[in-house]
Image (cartoon, rainbow, N blue to C red):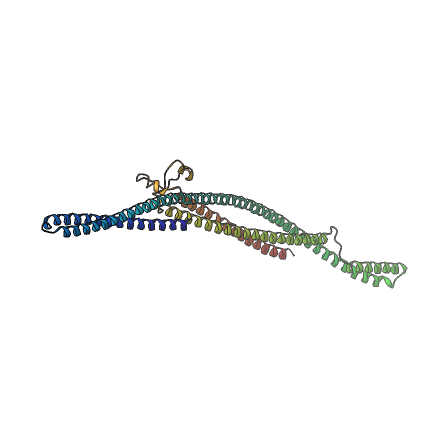
Length: 397
């Protein structure tokens, strides 16, 4: 469209130059004709004044010469008239072509203006849609961050509950260890008493073995008692209440609980880290794409808005049809008056909205950082708890 417009302007300039040349030629011919008329009048006056003493033959010759000159001048005048008529025809044709070209240029300018306005409106609508999409994504991310915070609080509550259970179990184990220690001390006393009884049985069996039949029977009974004592001492001690088995079960349960807690902590840490990484990547990619698109479109809109005021729009006819070409609330540059010029266009409002959106997105970028710091704090807390649990397990054993 712009190339056709430039070609039409060049054709108009060429037609203007041709018409100016024709006008100059016509003016020159008219001046020559006027000068010839003046010379003819002067010659006739000079003939009248200076040619009174000539003969008739000379007068006839001069008359014939003057007639020939007059015929030549008439021919030249007719040729000049023909040239003037041809020049006038060409001038009228060039003027008609010029009017047609002006009308065509006006139509082309209208079409170009319509195309630019449509593109600007479409770009504005697309940018507004993207801003709305970004707002929706920001709201979704806020909801997700709130859900993660609630989940972290739930995990912290579970952690506190598990730590309380662990302390309770450790207290139970300590109590049972104390009971087992007392039982072991009692068992050691019983074993020592049985050993003393075995020694006394040996002494009595030796004492009563050499005497009567009753003494021999008593010695055999003492030997049997000694055998039983040896069997009791050699057998593994059986506790009445099964405290060792219970402590072993408790230790196994504690180990299982610790392993399960470690697995759950590792899984939660991995899941939180993966989700945080995904959220960071998605937010950074969306932020980059939206910022690049919005900045590019705003620069295009600003440059298009600056170029619209520079176009030659003076020849465009203003009528009721132009109202359909312009969007509501927009005035073209050639229709602005001096009083309406300082008003800002609707396009200049967009950078302020963009700054507000960017500031809001910067505030939202701090959420993943806070979540990371919270996760690190939880990891340190879990590690500290594992260290304390290991020390407590060693003390309990």
